Amino acid sequence: GGGGGGGGDGGSGSVGGSGSRGGLEAMQVEAASDAAGLSAIVACVGVVKDTAIPQLDSMLDDMLAQGQLRVSAADLEQLRLFGRAFTPEELSCIGGWAASAEGRVVPQHLPGSCILWSDDGEGRNIWSDLLGSRPVVCLRVPLDLALVLARVRTPHVLCGSAISLLWSAIKAGRFGVVKQLLASAPALLDDELDPSILREAGTYDCEPLYIACSEDGLHLDTRFEMVRTLVSAYRARATQQGVEGNIFYVINRRWRPSAEYRALQAARERGFDDIWRYLIESGVPFDSSAYTDPAERDVIDRILTPHRFSMSTLNLNRGANVITDEKILHARQLFGRNNAMVWGYLVGKLNLEDCAPPGGWASLDPDEVRSRALRDAIDTEARLRDLRSRRLLAEQERLREDLLAEQLAYSSLRSAAADPKLLCFVCNPDNDPDVPSLKQALNDALAASQAIPAHIFGGTQYSKVGGKRTLQEAQTADRDCSFARLKEELSAKKPWYFLFSGHADVTGPCREKRLGFTNSEGQITSTEVDNDQVAELLARSQVRLVVLNGCESLELAKACIRKGVPAVVCWETVVPDEAAYLFVRGFFRKLAESQEAVVSKDDFARAFDVGKEAVVSKKSVHLTVESGERS
Image (cartoon, rainbow, N blue to C red; front, side, top):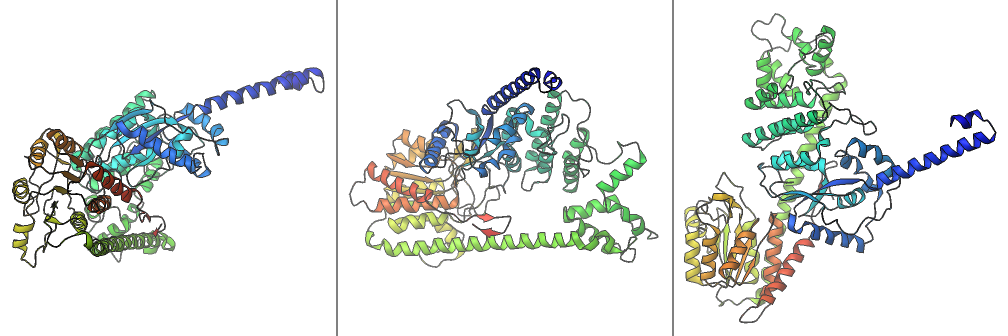
């Protein structure tokens, strides 16, 4: 280049310029080669290790058949999320990769060795419905294929980026998933001030730590273990990058309270004293004392507690009626993170209305920006709750209407004098604080009974099967779905088919997942009954078909087959209530069409296919949180 510039229009200039262009082309080819080899981590929720690749390959085949196996502009919008798990070297190549990615045809099948790890553990957050206890498989695949897989969003399988899995796993209490994920992608902890700027070693994104301290529904022991897991991961990342000293700060690079400081405050406000002390011992600062310059410390204090600087006026000549840190903490425990309610409560309780700060009370919220934002947020949340309630009510009414319609449509298949061939146990633990109730479980048995005459036991607290009864009579006669009751009914009624609707993943000794039999009080009673006992009873009773309509019932199904039950239907994964209902309805409707005295396995197989199709073809109503609209 220097020679070319010195040569002017001469030959040496031409040679120099040509040599420079040739070098640039070589560099571009090398960068393109590096970019072509980019890979990304994909998190697949709802699949298990043994069947993950065939299941996802089948979905890719469907996309190919629909001409959708190309990278689209919408796919590239997910690039930033996937990039959170990239190393600095990979980030330097991502721009060149993205420039030519749109329209690229992706591989039709997954690499055979793409599975990094899997986790079949149990979630520990009773409020989490995204990840919960569903199995997880993490893959490393070419980046273009990862972006296409991120489109997979079915009721049973959800694919996405590693950073999305990290947030969901923290909220669900799955610290085993968090450990494996951060071990395979430690760059997820690096702070990202701007996507166009390479990350700086020693600055970390502590938002996951704040989520662990503030998320509702986590058991205290699980929360503490999650916090310890994250702090250990931050320290390991610092060691990996050669960073020494404290890695936690009180403000972030955007000059706002840092996520680790907010995590510490959340632990204190919610009464998690052990976590609060552990974070302080781990180096998370709780004030501005680390800053020696008084001017800097004053600026930091104003960032951390902007309302505190009106306290001098509020506390002037008020005697004992002063706002202290203890009173602020008590108010925050009452009102959470709603600072407007905290200060309004303290001002009213301590009679400080006449001690307005300089500029008046309006100076705390110029132009009512904060109050309007708070009102809008409260109004939006109220609208969303109302929409969810109306949607749930409409869905329940629709299910009941479907049952009534089926009763008329399938009346020709039933004989009033026919002996019921189906025995249904509806185990709804609606009076057990340790497990969630199953309000929709009775619908499964009712849907099955519309096609095949059935004896139904269990259901809700106010079951009226057989006529009006008192609550006590209903509990005694209808709600006893214990293992002992099952023995009696199988012996007395000799059914062809047995349907269990309830929890099938109740943990017993040695962490074995068992059926959740219930007593007349609506409480789980089955921890002492193992799978082999249940399987042996069903086989000895010569039941022709067992339908285990509960989560993760595969192990019991295998035990039933070993003991000699001819046919068993089960769920390998966690199952939503509506999916369980749709399957049973479709399955027994098809089974009822068989007029043979001895129903064959082929009949069961056809009924299974119809039940499966009823689930996968269902179009669900989804709630768009941003707009509050249904889509």
